[in-house]
Length: 214
Image (cartoon, rainbow, N blue to C red):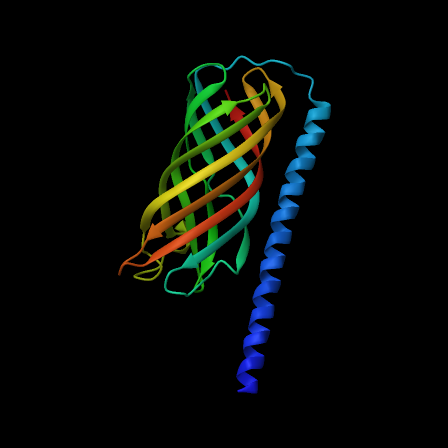
């Protein structure tokens, strides 16, 4: 009994340590974003931008992804550092501050020695509260699929779908004509439904540099 109790205590301590490490990583990401935005605010010289027509953007960044399986195979207690892939955005300006967009956030994660991709296709609205600062949010389709480079015969070939929500914010620190660079942060939460009434939840947070054409 003492051995079992000791193992339980050690397991609890380990889980708390993992959670603290995850929170620390997320705090570092948030600090990086805020530092970059502050720097951009102090160095930006443009005061106005005319936005019209179509929008295209791709983002280069990295962050954290946590996956939880209803079967208990993997839980949110363990997060993985990874790159954003792919992270594209298409849209159209309704006026000089409001745009309707479709974005494709996603990250690669490891599951039972296989590389998989948890992403989404999300219709959303993007609004510029200030000339350089925007917020984007929406709800759409979650997609849990094998990484394209790691599809094996009858192994790691299942595609699962569900729903996802996304909230992101960005600050444009460089603009020239219809081109802009921005530093941004994205948070996505989704649930994909598996066979046998099971499901898989995914939560991602990332910081990146966006290359956009307005």
